[in-house]
Image (cartoon, rainbow, N blue to C red; front, side):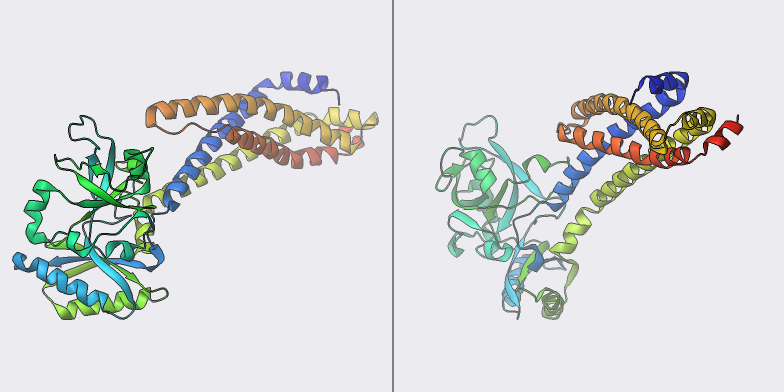
Length: 409
């Protein structure tokens, strides 16, 4: 098809063509960057924690009165929980993955190190923690019961920290990238080293805010052998497969009957914790998706409106073309080609706008660079949208009888 008449018609109606071109370009820029952000946020929401989430639940316990009895009461609770029918194992800790916040610290491999080698989340654990969380040990061993420090020796523990730790695999690789970390020293912010005795495949930190504190070292975690017993603790319980709901109910009843001088709250399955911790992320994804759909719909309506206007303005030309032997397919092809030319220009301009917006976001919000295949997807979407939106007005133009068109001057 000769595009010269099409270009000439577009020059006579350049304002409408420029307006719809800009609209399509902006839609392309928003679409590409929004889909990229949605994919990143979705990956953040769905990232694995390394623990057996389907079978784990947590309970926050706050003791009432007699703080000197906290350690003994916590020990009795754990013994009762581990003996409960349907429970695989349990332990008490300061934090757990998906909690939303916790403890962290800098780590090094030398005593006189000025700058830390890595930053990691700190979890207090005992010799039951690995089994409770369902962690996969890829090197070394678990804690022995004798290595776990009791709360009564906490002052000595924090003063010397001459003990052992278990670290996640990403942290082990960050500390000792070219050798096994098992048996190697690690300094947890004090002059005395701990020895790495085990490495677990994966254990995410407790932080849940995308781009917030902790997101840069989410895979770095360290298990510290300490029987956590303070007025407010978290019990982490793993149920046998298929028995989570019943065990959650029985565990609450068991602890309440064993010692009523407590406040038991936030009893949640890990699946519920994941959903609640990422509630804002889910809302953010939905909002972005809605924005994309609305912009595509508005752009499509704009194309329909502009093409319909052009069809109305050119009824006489359409009639003459039909009278001179032009077929309905020729008329349809004319308007589809006209829209395709506008869409191609919009795609080129939109790609440049997309890259520029992403570079600004990278420097301002520390976002990742946009992969180029998003441009290909966005461009293809805009081209397809243009052709679909222009089809109905173009079809109506092709159905105009020549005699009717020539009378409607």
